[in-house]
Length: 236
Image 1: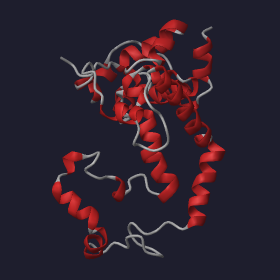
Image 2: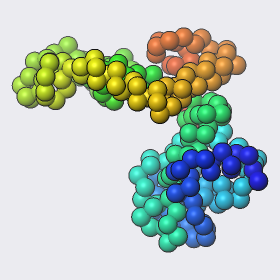
Image 3: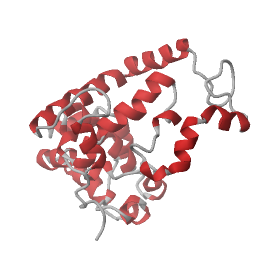
Image 4: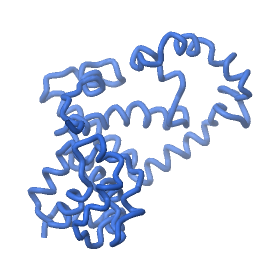
């Protein structure tokens, strides 16, 4: 049996996600991602069900597994109770674990997610941190957003938020003891180790691509994975 398939079997999401695909294509018909990307959940299920080592490895290195939005529409329609969305979660986790994610453009963007969203969660306790969304990287926000960035306190006070305040309320300051608990959860569940692997494999890829790599978002490799698009992802 394929070693990679055995590794997938260790993931409870994979166990729940694939029972017996009959290749009917119902999942693809309902899939939102399939409308826009070169993505077919039926083929994903069929590939892992084949237990073919080479095919699964290619899948782990591909753009394909990063197109799914994990909306789980596939689960609601499958006549056999399969859930390609759960299969995708297991494939993504294994791709990160083995370092295969850096072999695809979309996969390399995992470093962005780790340093930005992941960093916000561990530092501030929020997966979306307002002061981190400036027009220097998100130009589409426009000049009004620049003004808001400088006046968050006034704006959010008018909306009834408790921005960076102590105690209860929307956008309040998260107490340090709560942040410590979040970090402990990451450590116990393997999140911290996974983040370290994303950094390790990303650094190795940056060296292979001859791009400068360091902490933060202001370096060649990070800016490359954030802005580069090979324009092969969407359906023609």
